[in-house]
Length: 517
Image 1 (tube, one colour):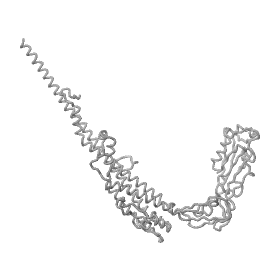
Image 2: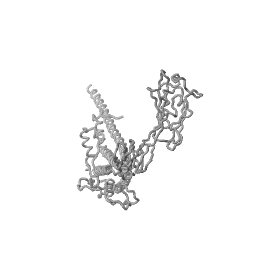
Image 3: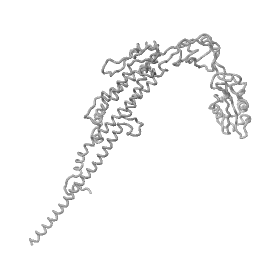
Image 4: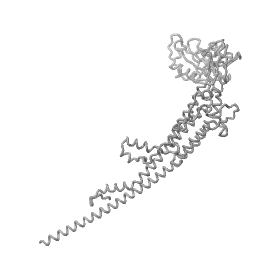
C-alpha cells in the first residue's frame, strides 16, 4: 500500500518523481554511450560497404581483360559484312570475298491444304473432334491417341528423335506448340488462310549430309494428315565464302567466329570487303577513368569521415530528450552528434595510407617488353591541392597516348598477377589491401548478416552497455520502492500521530464538560 500525502498533505508522487529523476542521471549517460557505439558501428559498416563495392567494381573493370583489351571492327561495307571482336582478336585486316551463298535453314510445308474444301476447322479446338474436316484421315494408336515420331540432326550429324502422343482433347496448335518446345530444334505453325502447315529448322546450315534435315518416316499423321512429305522439303545450305585468300570456306551460320573476330555475312557478293580490327582506345580510356573516378569518390568519402570534427558536447539524444525537442532541433543536434565518430581512426587512416602506397609503387609484370612501370607514366598523378586529400588527376591526352602505344602494358599496370607485391598490378594490390581492411573492420563493427553481437567487438561493447543499463534500471526500481516505503511509513506515522491527537483532544473536551457541571 502506497499512501500519497493523505496525512502529511505533501505531493508524494511528485517528490518521488523528482528524487528518481536525480537518481537516474547516470542512466542518461549510459544510454548515450550505448547509442554512440551503435552510430559508430554504422559509420564503420558504411565505409566497409564502400570498400566492398570498390573492390568488386575493380574486378569487373580494369582487372577484366575484355574491358582493357577492347577491340573495334570497321567494315568497308557494313551492308555486306559486319563484325565485332573479342579481347583475344588479333589486330589486322581481314578480307572477305566471293560469298556465293548465305546459310539457310531447311524447311518443309504442307503440299496442299490439310482441311477438305468447304470444311470448317478451328486449330484451337480438339483435333480428333474435328476429324470430318480431314475426311476421317487419322491413324490413331490402340488407345485412340494421335502418335507420331520425328527426327532431326544435331551439330555432330547424330539423329535426334522424339515421339509425341496426344489425347482427344489436343488441338492442332497444341501439337505444333509441343514440336516447338521439343529438343528437335524446329519451328512449326499453321496458316489459317491457306490451311497449310510450315515446319522449319531453327538453325541454319546443313546438319545431315546424307538426306533430309526433317525426317517423318513412319509417321502418318505428319505425312498423310499434315501433308509434310519429303519431296516438299527445301534443303538447308551453308554459307560459302573466301577469307584472306582461303577459298571454299563454309559455315553453318551467317554469324561465325574466326580468331576472335565475329563475322556477320549480310548478303552475297563477289567484290572484296575488308574488316579492320584495332584497339578500342576510347573504351579502354573510359574503363580507366571510371576506376579513377570511383577511387577518388572512395578516398573522399573515407577521408571526410576521419577528418570530420567531433563535437563532445553533443551526445546522442535519448528518447526522453527527443520528446522535449522540435524536429528541427533534433535534426541540428543529430548532425553534430553523428559527426566525427571515427575521426583519426587508425583502421581507416591505415587503409587510405596503404592504398596510396599501392598506387605509386613500381609494377613489374615480368614482361620484358613492358612499356610502363609507374602509374605516372600513364598520366595519372596526385592533386597538388592539399584539400583534395590525395585525389587523382588524369592527363587525358597522355593516358590516351599510352593506351594507343601499348594497351597490354596499360592493362598489366592494373591487373598483373605476380606472386610478389612488386609483380602485382595496382588494382590487384588495392583489392588485397581492401580485403584485409574489410576483414578487420568486420571484426570491429561486424556485418549485417551476423546473427549475434558477440561476433564482433563493438557488438560485445553494446551488449555490455545494455547489461549495465539493465542492472542500473533494476537498482532504480529498488531505490524507488525504498523511497515509497519511507514515505508510506512517514504517512502512516503521521496518520497515527494525528489519530492520537484527535483522541487526546476528544478526551480533553469530555473532561472539561464534566467540571462545568
